Length: 226
Image 1 (cartoon, helix red, strand yellow):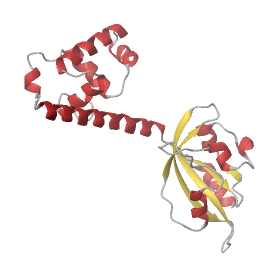
Image 2: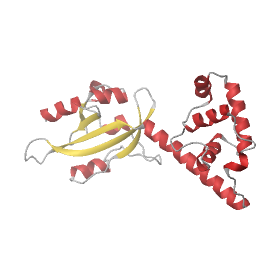
Image 3: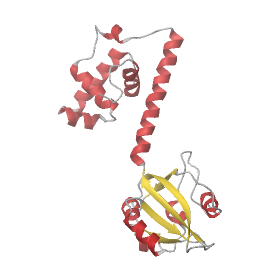
Image 4: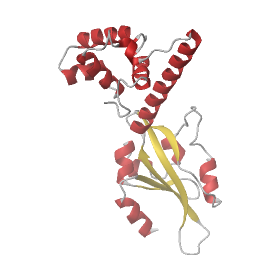
């Protein structure tokens, strides 16, 4: 066990260990940095009392008689999973969690359960943004099919985007908001909004998300957002 504690103390991933009663007996420094709770604050508590994690549908994952922990105790193979939790500061955070059982000694039947986790919030947010773009893209395609209209980039050449509007479109595709675009281009927020409205009109779409979807569909920006 001492070796396990030492190894987990050195990992950059958050890590905690629970005993057979699901009480936290180890909490490394990376866990402190990710979630804000100190080892002293969580020692002896049930793991679900700290995490209270939810899945993507908002269903409770971390609870008494956690199925993942029970499966680990039975020696089952567990895939990693994404869990939505709250930090000590009350901020929402996605964790990618791996769980496995570890014998307390060679040949021992008694086990502890190890949880390794890392902050997956940015990855989740990016995934959510991509899904929104794809959804908007599908909506545009369906609208076009219903109206029997095939809009191509050449149809917009006469009313093509200005260089500045193209810059704004690229930054929108990278996920920047009005304030961030204004700061990046050293222009005012109102100027950004004017460029966006003019751009929407030229592309024949109704929202920023639809503009991004249209731009990807018709090659106005590259697949890397450039």
